[in-house]
Length: 162
Image 1 (tube, rainbow, N blue to C red):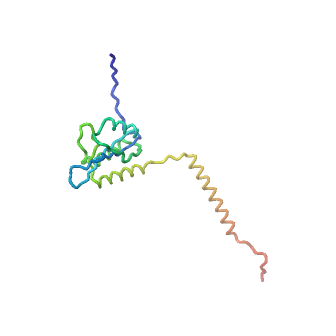
Image 2: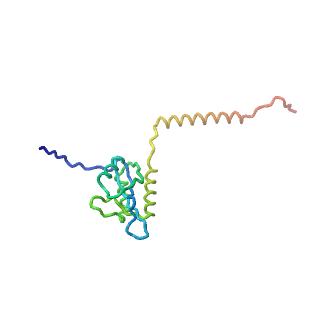
Image 3: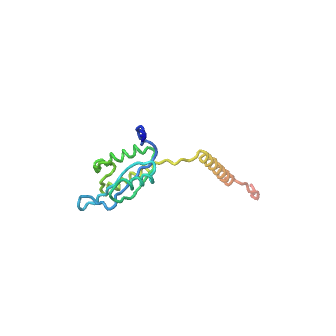
């Protein structure tokens, strides 16, 4: 029997990818009268494959994907979110990404996800920008000439001078 040993490769999470928010369904926490949400904030390069992995290996409860956003540096964004809610972290053996979140904190997390999502830059091809500027210049010139022709005083020939 041959054993192949793969060298350990450091995973680089400071690359473009997805940050996701999962919510455990049916979890309401230990504090009476306070509806806690158990949520997972994680990162992945592929949301679909991550959900498949989680379904086959992890929690003893159902969960739903609340939101996933594409970011340029998924490691930094995830670290920022984890630090923001570290006091709500659930101490588990295999994961440090689950949090017991209060309703107003949940709303804050959704707001932060929307903020990161809105910072995403849209790539516009340079040719489209140049073409739009040329078209805008042409429209401006056309309007300028139209206004100038209407503003030029016209001499009327039927008026007599005294």
